[in-house]
Image (cartoon, rainbow, N blue to C red; front, side, top):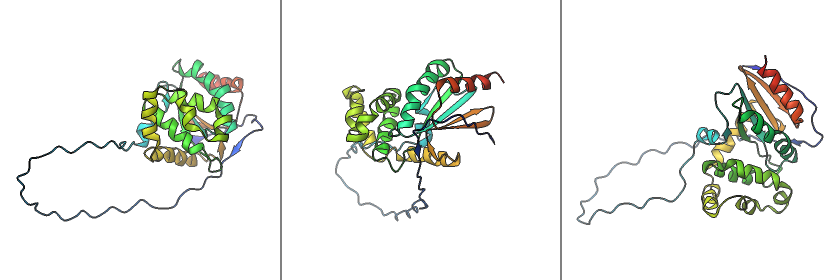
Length: 237
């Protein structure tokens, strides 16, 4: 895969990623226990109760639910973002929203949100869990919007739950809390971080634009005018 770097002018406010990757291996598989013949019982059979714990969610399934647009669109745009990063907020409010309105809705761009929570940001992973949980109940856009809109408040007081609850119905919030409360979604978040490492992401936001097999990393915040110009250049090649 050819990797070309597009280096536009970057906004002054920018978050630097201090990413520490774990070197621990996967847990060893347990040996199956020996089967023993159970004693015959005359007690009536009972149906086991269904577990209320959330099922394991694959990173691939989660990634698909965090995407907008048509997968066959000529351009794929992956935005590696941290919900607590001010520069990511700026990119979302001023650029990504317009890309959604003008290019994703027109079938020209397939947009994928990628989580890249920075260790320096105390509440960023929790926010990512809530956003991913919302994706599982088809409310990703609403939650991403409110997290970035209200970032100055929850990044200080840590009230991620209350911020998300303001954007969802009580029934939706109940589902989101059930998913976000454990570590069910961490594999998907960690998968995004690992992918960002493959793309050599070192700061947020970083946008990877792919067109005809070529990757163009756009590092930092750019204006919508610059992003539009670049997208149009690719589409008219």
